Amino acid sequence: MDFPLVFLYSIAILPLLYFIRRHFHRKSFQNCYILDYECYKPTPDRKVSSKFSGEVIRRNKHLGIKEYKFLLKAIVRSGIGEETYSPRRMFEGREASAELNDALFEMDEFFLDSIGKLLDRTGTPAEEIDVLVVNISMLAVMPSLSARIINFYKMREDLKVFNLTGMGCSASLISISAVENIFKSLRNVNALVVASESLSLGWYSGSDISMLLTNCLFRCGGCTILLTNKPSLKSKSMFKLKTLIRTHHGGSDESYNCCLQREDDNGITGFHLGKDLPKVATKAFVDNLKQIAPKILPITELLRFVILRFLHKCNSSVPKPKINFKTGVDHFCLHTGGKAVIDAVANNLSLTESDVEPARMTLHRFGNTSASSAWYLLAYMEAKKRLKKGDRVFMISFGAGFKCNSCMWEVVRDLDGENTVWKEFIHDYPKQDLGVNSSFLRKYGWIRDENPDKFRIPDDLQIHEDDDHIPALLALIKSLRAKGKDV
Image 1: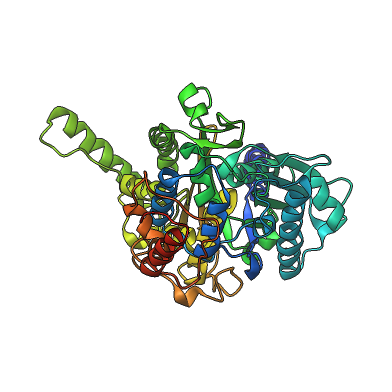
Image 2: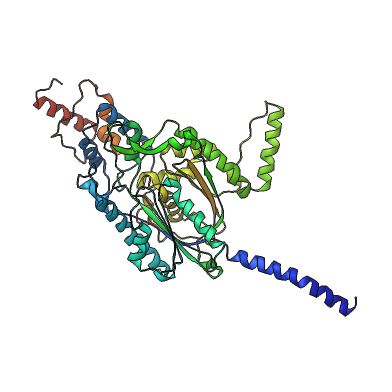
């Protein structure tokens, strides 16, 4: 071929090569990496023991034996332990009369501890944060909580700021989604996501059983996450976002009303969890899986499922197939909404006890910390040194609305777990038979056998740290007899 002809062909193909290079170069800046994250651990004086729980419940004069039995059943089934955390005003006996300053102080403790630790550990000055996304569902103030953080850390004036409220337990993945979209249009950006929940103003002091459950499950916690799209920091990052899917069923009245902040019949504000919640959550979960499964599972698994499903339709004797998510997932970060939620998701995905161990242990040690729960699970896996380079982590969260959000993370490098919130006590986990061995059951199990018509708790009854059901029952009987009651 003549040289002039080759030259002309080369000239003609150069624009194509330029656009191909430009496309891949632009794509390299659109990746979403987690550089590091920090889960918040409140101070030990805020731990919720079974003794303290009993004292708080007894202070609610609206409760009777029916509500006591429900609360005992709920907390024992959940597997929650005695080392979760509550706001400080609970320990001052002011859970029914909290003030705005209590909620702000609760947030300030989290902001100053976790954000500071994360920025110091990564060597990132606050001035180098380009995007700030804050999600605190149950507290909206003016100036916003994001403005409060900016003021604390003296961040830049051109910072891109997003303040999310009312998004519920799935809010952290909504925040990640917002950052991912920003990364598609801006290069060399650092983003800080701050996820927590304010419980100071959210305690329910009434007797509506549908609103008491949140008192059992929700505890203080939070997480700060530092993300970047800088290609130069890829080797230092921990995780790379592969895909994220958001499902919102708010258009359905049933879905919208199953998780709702409202007043009870006595005008006491709380968070209502309806009887339709399991059905609503399942529907949202299934719809979300339909969208994300093709993005995270190998083609062989998808083909196997399609073929077996076709055979099942043709011949009912052929067993109904189920997708094996383990063909595309190595680890599962399940929403810690409670034991029932964990069990339901595990059953739908055919997971083993080993798969759901991080979720059960997180619920036991930290409770349901709302939007930050998934990151405590991730920290548990990291502390157990389970996360190796190339592993795929499937993260699932549910939230009021009703929402189901999920995403897939790829582990960028082997993680040693040296800086996690679990590092001081990870050797104590996993624990076995959480419900059977519950300290709440040992201390208050006698309530289950009480006669509702004769049951009374005297105001001067003392609850001791080492009470099991026998001495507690004897103390109750003795106190009632001293007051002239026929026991």
